[in-house]
Amino acid sequence: MLERTFFSNKASRIVESKRLPMNKRLALPLILVVFIALPATRWITLSVLTDAFFQVAAFVFATLAIYYSLSSRISEHAISRFLSRYPAAEVGMAALLGALPGCGGAIVVVTQYTKGATSFGAVVAVLTSTMGDAAFLLLAQAPMDGLTVMGVSVVTGTLTGMLINTVHNYRDGALEQADGQSQPDDSEVTNTSMLAGHLSVWFWAVFAIPSVSIAGMLAFQIDVPGAFGLSESVWLTIGSALALCCITLWALSSRGQNYSSLMSEDKSEHPIIWQHKSAMDTQFVLSWVVVAFLLFELLVEIAGVDIAHWLSSMGSGVVGLAILIGFLPGCGPQILVTSLYLNGAIPFSAQLGNAISNDGDALFPAIALSPRAALLATVYSAVPAVLVAYSYWWWLE
Picture 1 (cartoon, rainbow, N blue to C red):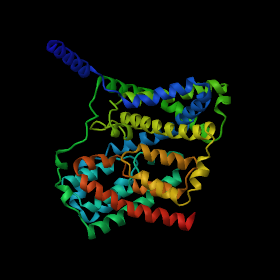
Picture 2: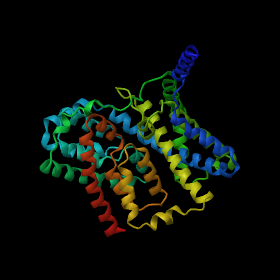
Picture 3: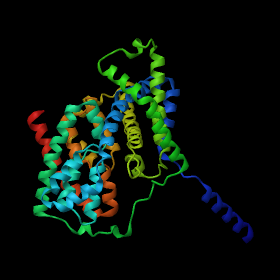
């Protein structure tokens, strides 16, 4: 009896040790395939995938390619030296770094703070001004709105950071060791993720120019399927296939086992290869845009829910809701909010409040390296988000 129990326990441990961890990212492409297979959701899903690829992903990739090809020529060490050498200008510089699309500038400032090289006001400034990857989506779809948000965020971040340095320049966080805690590492490179990364670069090398060209035609209201002699079904099949390829590559580019791997962009190698970084970030943004667009369309078309009317009926409450969503770490939830704004479901004040309150991916290293400072900075950034967003709502909407 004891021998049978011993072998039974040993066998169960072997099975447990060989059990493969589940990649949570794969749930998205699998769900999309199911929706395409179901007649009730097929055409909605195909339409969403096609629109998201040609009207969002193509422009986002073009924006990212230009941005990363230029920023790759700027040394992070030079930025760090500037922040250390000119403390009087560090808050404004931090706000400018935060306003840059993506989370790279914000992560640099947060990392420098944990080393004692920058003030706490600089951290608050950069977290207040950053909009993360949602900025790429807003700039690609509504450039003037994106520039307005960036300008307001820089001014708000600078003033808030200077005020914080005056009243509460929290320095303990620079020496904090996070009590020995760290986030689970989900960035380990596997053969699958490496292959997905290479395929992503090749995918966009082949399809970038045609996709951006088609996106430009759509922007000028040209009937693309008609211009190429394609039926509506063939057009939707091509667009959805390209989008599904991108989303699958995003799913395979990480082990996808924790919150940050789902909500934030993949970590990049150093030095940054702009082709790789542009491809991976585009696929991350596309995946979350598809989630937002598909939820919106399914609720409207299938469930008969008028989301725009429901959110507008909340009045000023929708602004507070957008600000609260901004507190969630990562760029995924913020892309959802920006997608709602682009669909006309929420007002500009809500978009502005979310942009100021959200900390993007920069909150992940902040939580890992200095959790108390991260909490304080998040609380402090909430105040200007409420003041600015509700002031805009009260006076201009």
